[in-house]
Structure formats: C-alpha cells, structure tokens
Length: 283
Image (cartoon, rainbow, N blue to C red; front, side, top):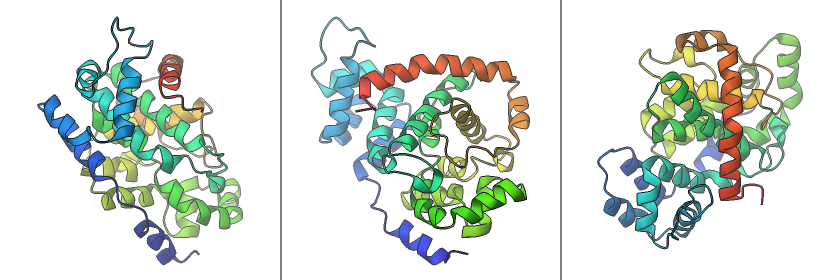
C-alpha cells in the first residue's frame, strides 16, 4: 500500500484556491447579490472579464450591440452563467494535465468535468429541481481528486485493475484498497482545504456513493447521474469508467428511466457545442 502521508503531502502542496474566485463564488450563492458587489470582486481578474465579454458577444446570444464593459456583461449573463465562467477559469489549468493513471489524455478530464456540469443543468430541468450555481460547481469539481492521485494510481495501476477485473471491485473501492483512500475522498479533502461550502464538499466525497447522502441532499445524486451520463457519452472515459453501482436506485428516486438519460444526452450536444464555440476548449 502507498504511504498515505505522501498523498497528504501532495494535497498540502496544492496552491490555495484564488481568493477572488472564492469570494465571487460566495457572493454568487446569495440571490440578493448586486452587480456592483460582483464587480468589486472580479473587475481586476483578466480571465473572468475576458470570458464574460467573449460569451456575451458570441453568436449564442445574438445581441444587436456589442458588450464592452464587465457591468453590461454581468447584466446579460446573470448569476448562473457567471458562476460557470468563474468556476471554469479557476480549474481549467488544473484539469488540463494528462491523467495517465486513469488512462486519460491531456484535456480529457476537463472535457469530462465541463460536460458533467452541463448535463447537471439538463437533469435539473428534467426533474424539476432549481438550477443553482452550487450544483454546477459541485459537478464541475467532482473529480478534483484524480489529479492528486494520478501518479499514485499509475504506480499501482496493475494491482488496482486486477481488483476491478478479477475481484469485482468498483474502481474507487480498488483505489481505497490499494492506496488507502480513493479520488472522491481526496477531492473532498482538497475542497475542504479550499474552504468550499459543505454541500459541495459532500457531493465530491459521495459522488460514487450517493446513497450515503442525507435524504434532503439533491446535489449529490445529481452529480452522480451527471457523471454517469458523461461516461455513457464516452467523454473522458478512462480506466475507471467501467464500475458504477446503484444507478437504478438514484434514477428511481427522481422517477427517471433509461430513455430519460438518452434524452439528456441528446440535449447535451447542443449545449456542449455552444460552450465549445464560446470558450474554444479544444484550442
């Protein structure tokens, strides 16, 4: 078994979550936050400002006039889409690394993350749950732990795969058995270190085991279903894309059938293509 102290040291060495993003996310959680309050926090961040203007001036919005200021851009976008930009700007570099331990090429984890987040929005509409920045963020960040565990999984890949293929383990169970912790727990530890809200931390920790979440928690099962749908689409599928359990129970909770997931996947492509055009994620 890998020395868990080495994993903990790697978590501790992660750079702090940028204060501007953390503050913006806190403000965006509050429905009564004003545009002025948001501008005070994010006006000096070039990446956020550039992407706000880029999105507003894209063909997706089809505005008759160009948007030149952050203030006008925030009015056009609204809080939910601003949260998408803030979250995306924050983690894109972190997610762009090659996840060789999980059989992922450079950029695969980012595509998987943004796809899952977009699917969470579609699922929310389908099941009648209010779409919130918290759900989007939790889904976007659910696999954070993979980038810390990546090298350790690569080092012990043979043992992990053997447990999955021959022992009937799920991938995260095999991670836990061989490494002492799985990527979901590591991701939650990162979120705790970055002072994220408890509901996001819990969703990251339990995104493979939503049955352990409290009954009133709708975020965790939505993150779980979004992750499954992304894998079914073949996006960011690595060596852990074989072993999901409990899907039927979660779908039953929301009254969903297989055909509903198929409908989600069809609706996803339009949303993904729009984001891909706006943010040029393949560049």
